[in-house]
Structures are given as C-alpha cells and as structure tokens.
Image: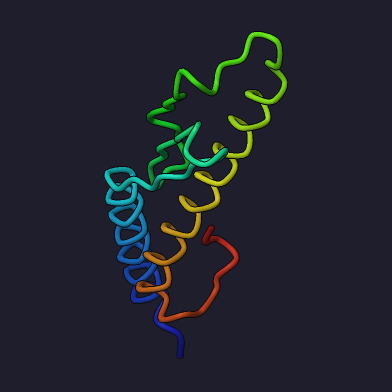
Length: 103
C-alpha cells in the first residue's frame, strides 16, 4: 500500500533541497566575454546579469552595431553558463535523473 503521508514528506524534503540549491546558485557567479574580452558579463545561478564591463576601446561611435552584437553574445554565453551551473547542482540532488520540474 502506498503511504501518502510518506510521499508528501519526501516531496516537501525534495522541494526544500531544490530551494536550497537555488539559493546557493544565486550566490555563485559565472563569467563570459566576447570580442577577445572587449565585453565581459557576469551572471549568477539564477540567470540574472549582475555585471557588464565594456572596455573603452570597444566603443566605436561609428559602429555601435558591433558593440551591441558583442554585448548580446556575452550575455547569452553568461546565461548559458549560469544554466549549466544550476543544472550541475540539480544533478547532485537527482543523481543524474532529469526531472521535468527541474531546469
């Protein structure tokens, strides 16, 4: 017979562990750059951008489009690394099993 209370208890414990992992991920950061370091972006494990650095020599008033492309590339790379960081932490919880509710 299935013990519903035991399943609910396990569900609460897993949810608490997931929340703890998410809080820890928010404290961790990853860095990405583009244009040979002309644009550097730092994101946390919650996929939030926490810092953008643009070297002055990357700013060409006659070619703003290139700078925009560098920013987009660095941001996308930082977000991807952030997702990988969070997935790595979640994998520790699930033992490698990918659950639909997980990232």
